[in-house]
Image 1 (cartoon, rainbow, N blue to C red):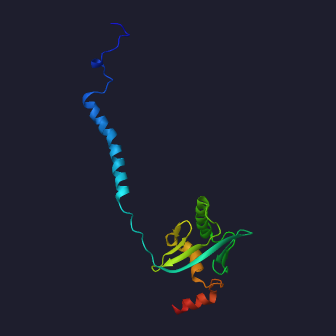
Image 2 (cartoon, helix red, strand yellow):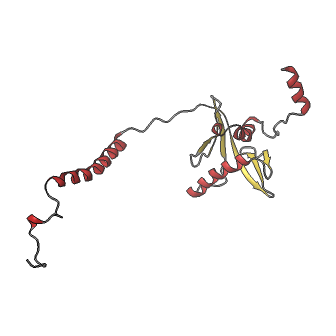
Image 3 (cartoon, helix red, strand yellow):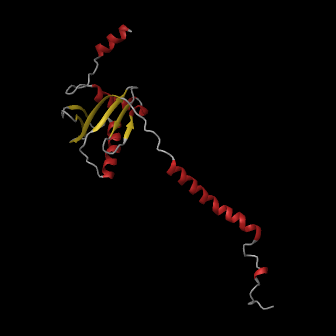
Length: 176
């Protein structure tokens, strides 16, 4: 027998025949079936209802970077300065605002439009960007976040947040 002679088809072992064909076809069909099922459910299921939240109080704020690393927070309606954070202060506020500003930049939205701080009837504090729809639930980050943003919502326009003196702290301690 010559070495260049082709092997007849019925003697070839590399050809897929008989029983081996069905498991292979089944393995190929599984991902296709999964794709069809997922597509069908995504297209036919109604959208989940949006969770409605009742807002108890809200304020629109504008943030400005000032020389020396100062971040100034202003009321969007009156342009009154509510608070200033010097370099090294208000780290959570700085980082969370960077995240919201980056989202605006990526989407090509107005950088000077105000942001909204709001508290719902359950006491949950949120900072949101009305333009991009992005929001950050501040309660999830604990006391530091609430200390940075809470006074901005609570204080009346044009007044600085009240700082307790040592004598006020002592008087409160005596009454307890």
